[in-house]
Length: 65
Image (cartoon, rainbow, N blue to C red; front, side, top):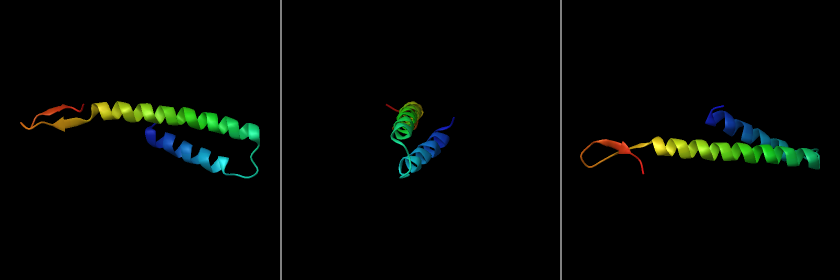
C-alpha cells in the first residue's frame, strides 16, 4: 500500500470515529488500526527521508544526513 493510500485510510478512520452512532468497541478497533497505519506512515516517511539526496558545495549528490 502506498503512502498516499495509507493517508486516505487514516482520513477514513477519522471520519468513522467522528460518527456519533459508532460503538465503543468499534471505535477502539478503528483507533487501533489507525495507530498502526500511522506507524507505517512514519516508517515510510523515515525511509524516504534517508533516500533524499543533498547537493554538496562541489555540486555532487550525497546521501541526506
